[in-house]
Image 1 (cartoon, rainbow, N blue to C red):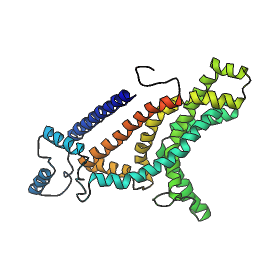
Image 2: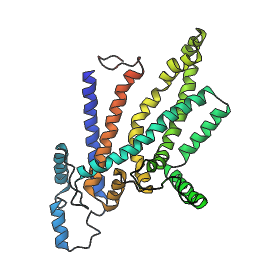
Image 3: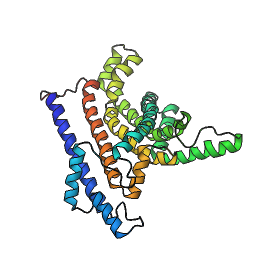
Amino acid sequence: MALYVLKRLGFMIVTLWIIVTLTFVIMHAVPGDPFSNDRMTPVVLANLKAKYGLDKPLPEQYVIYLKNLLHGDLGVSMRNQTRTVNELIGQHFPVSAQLGFWSLLYSVPGGIGLGVLAALKRNKWADRSAMVASVLGISVPSFVFATLLQLLLGVMWKRWTGKVLLPVGGWGEWRQILLPAFCLGIGTLAVYARMMRSSMLDILNQDYIKTARSKGLSGYEVVWRHAIRNAILPIVTLFGFTVVGTLLGSLVIEQIFAIPGLGMHFVQSLTNSDYTVILGTTVFFAALLVFALFLVDIAYGFVDPRIRVGGGKS
């Protein structure tokens, strides 16, 4: 087991290095720089490039960045020189994490429950209704739901009743979390519902499920002790991507609802060609994704006793 963990850690480091390298190269290949739109004299522009090392050859810039990265230094924002990238992440990521947490809190259990219900009620109205809702949740982008709900619950509701049912922007109150969390998680709920339904239908047709029923086990025991435990394995595989994907998906939602999360600053850094913020947030999100996938691999052994890692056996 220890050897497996070390190998996975090695893969994590290599993956992060590849992501950092590709991001660095692609970012510098894009025309322009953080100061290209500023009205400044050539002397001031040259001094700024010298200060941030942009006048050095690209390989030298790359080596310097890697050295700083190994020391946990993500640099200083080139557009907001009073703040470091570490400070930006430390201040604004908790907002994105809170939004993602509330989104996952309803979408993952809700999707699993909806998928199980649809499988147990196959070809009945509950199954058809759940699958229609899932298709809509997958097909319609989250920002479309966000815009429609803002219009309906904000503008139209106030016009009809004179009051706003739910805030359509801002951050700080619990009521301001409901709409963006719902819009962010609806796609996840739909995907999990369809995956869980498909997996449950496959498991329910297995011989060991028929054997369990023939032994006189109740429907509750068959479903909860045998079917769901095995049907949920694809969900476990997807969960790592879901967590980080939810955080990345919040980029647009944060813009629509004016939420001061890390995603909003990442979008602004792309617009402003703020190299250090782009690199820092990319490395941060990549590290989250790789670590989440690592945890998923470990979780397999706990979810399914047939899966064993370590000692050269599986």
